[in-house]
Length: 317
Ligand SMILES: Cc1cc2nc3c(=O)[nH]c(=O)nc-3n(C[C@H](O)[C@H](O)[C@H](O)COP(=O)(O)O)c2cc1C
Image (cartoon, rainbow, N blue to C red; front, side):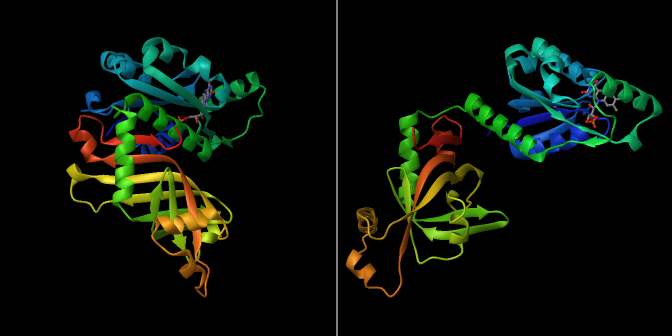
């Protein structure tokens, strides 16, 4: 699987905090300060640089790190983020990195960072006063780290990295293995969420033509489904070793099938259940239909076929 190296520098810890969060989302990863020893860039596929902005420039140690390792970095994919007071100036800040890394730099982002007056020296304070004055900003301590922006950035990088770096299995073959896997299994974990309520429900399913069908008496999963139709479905084998991984995480949208509809009867049929027997029951059996959107499939078999063991499959394509 693709490994990510996050290289940062930070004076007051803002860039470090963001680097750590990005490292968690992009894992497998390692987060290092620019001066860490014994790091072999060749062990990593994707490199993310995190730098603060001081005096109108990104950190010179990060630039030196890049220049020192430029031959290795030029053949990799890189991204970068900076912490600053005005994220709109990111184009200007990243100009030197764009020039050095060229096509290898696939994306960069600016985050508004943090300033704590009590942490600043007199010189810092004077500099900051001037900076705020030049930018028509009111001098104040500010803490503008927005976790949602960091998550969006990390997810964007994750998707770009997967798209650019995965040794992809041909689409038709992938479809075959995805459907084979779903058809060979019968039980999934249905994950639903709304506000602070989360629930993972082990439940039997049937798969057909990009949909999963679940027969259910009801229960707390509906507290979530009634508010949020976005679900995740996991299907997996028991762990038998790193060379025998097999697990799928699927994103989908859930709908309730009307019990008077033709579709309701068809799904019961698919399951080998007689409709007449179901309507005789003293309770209603509900059918949830999940439109499958995207599967992340980790399957060691792909590796033995010469592809990456993790593949992404879009059901709707
Ligand atoms: C002395 C000083 C100079 C700064 N100069 C700039 C600047 O020129 N442009 C900018 O956007 N932000 C500037 N900042 C804001 C920092 O980039 C911001 O506080 C950032 O969160 C610091 O990251 P760090 O905690 O990882 O060092 C400056 C901050 C200080 C204290």
